[in-house]
Length: 137
Image (cartoon, rainbow, N blue to C red; front, side, top):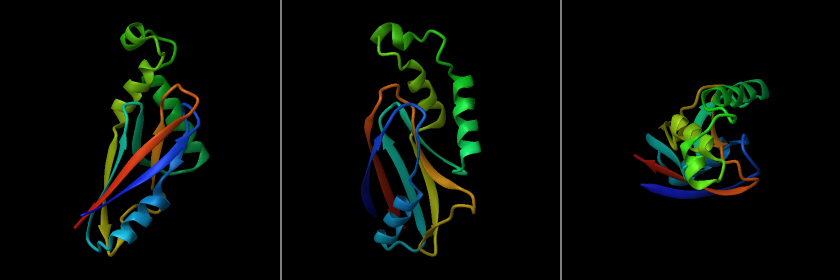
């Protein structure tokens, strides 16, 4: 097993960060030729998924999440904590905090237009996110 940490500074709700090069580097460093890479973001207001990292699809994803958990409705979390990020928690829970990708011949088995991304969903203007990458045979 090989594990490494990726630190990501984000700059507000809706930012989408391409992690693919850093995860691929972790796979290379691991020396694993055939196995599985798991990517996990610590925190309940961020998520990890795959998507084609191009402006149109990124915009579509942001729009879809705003329809699923809109900003302009009341959230019980906001009433309890007053921090305004109830929607952030809901969006993160729907997408999820982790992703597993096969490692084949020492490389991530992503499709041609498939990148691994971190979604910053918190309403705060900036966050420091910790992403764990674990590679196993």
